[in-house]
Length: 242
Ligand code: APR
Image 1 (tube, rainbow, N blue to C red):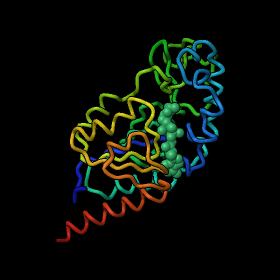
Image 2: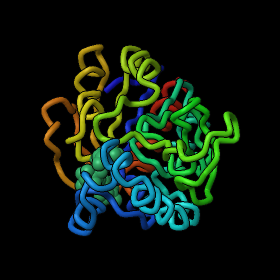
Image 3: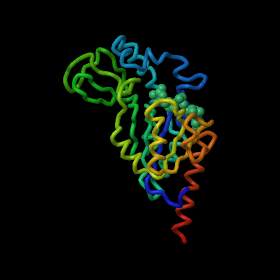
């Protein structure tokens, strides 16, 4: 590990929001244990039964609207505010807890629950309200073409140009609360390592990506990440005091 980093890149998954009370996807009571991916998270499912897919995400909105950021989200904001480096977040999460924690440089590669996109004109709208096949696009006026702005399996990820730029620049790559089984996000650590980053995984358990991590910090991110941020801050303040 270096004494001072200049470009820190943090990949987050559902595990960082678990201590805010939000379900992850692949745990015992995870979202994918109670719903079939094929029914709610593929573009085919959306075209086959748009309102069933809309309802799945509409029903998720109240809980995500009310969720509060936890100490892991707040630790990232503290790092951004107090550590002298560029700190970017690539999140797989569709919740807005990083934004609620006042983090900056948040890149949602799987989209956001409070957005919808018009498949006719491409307009993205922000809404916490229900979206359905009756929703009229406020830009082109076409009805029934609004889709949750959430990346379904088989669709291209969002902000990938930015992600590639950040992976090349990173000298520290942190992976927080992701099982590392969904690509291409699961390959980001390999790319960061290739370009010379130090890599650290924060999870309750070692994941399938463990070969590419220099360090594994086991435990709840709400406890382990604040401690890691404190150590980084102490190190850089100590160095600057010499
Ligand atoms: N602290 C740290 N890690 C945790 C915590 C916690 N408090 N709670 C759970 N975890 C870990 C679990 O051990 C697991 O490895 O978070 C991970 C959550 O894994 P998944 O449920 O698979 O969620 P994620 O990795 O974000 O899924 C990636 O898959 O289905 C798609 O689009 C969906 O964005 C999602 C993507």
